[in-house]
Length: 215
Image (tube, rainbow, N blue to C red; front, side):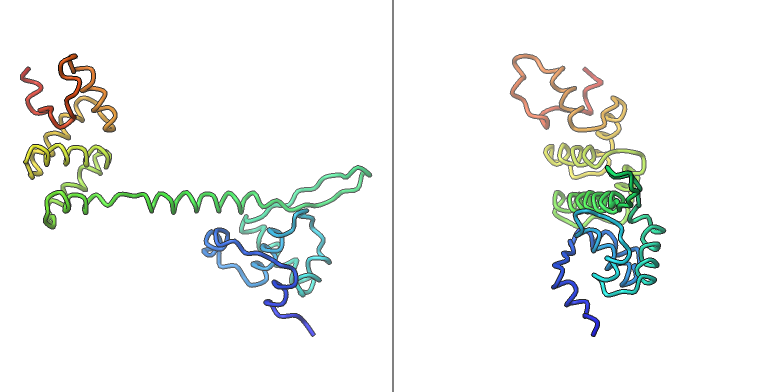
């Protein structure tokens, strides 16, 4: 009697990584494709032996070959051929495409986790919800290429000076933009160059950006 999927996974100790599962779930794999893919991931030698794979997964060779071709078409696996020491041609499976996909998925999710909610930061600093117009102003800064880091830096500069005003923040961003600043590191570098020995201990927020041109 054919084994169930649970028995197959248990007998062969096939392990399904959560990272792989998350990366491939958008590919709409058939059950057979999923089984063959996980089989290759668990096979240390990655050899393509249709009969052995079919037997281990309790599939027919036709079902196994169809699933294999499906994985090739979806570019989740690749097949390479080479000669062994005795001159025989062997076929092996490469999962580089799959692992690259997993890596990209991990990086993308990592960036999503790290992404700053800039709107909530404004609301926290202002101790109130931002208006729809203020929301659009922030979007306009972002659309014009101003980094979130620089916007938040200008916000903190304004708050430090007791000015909870978008016009004031916009002027700071404008002045920084004129100077070509892209990050707060650029801002700090500019300040460092302007400091005298007596002013070396001053903080970033002690500087009046809007009066600089009057010096």
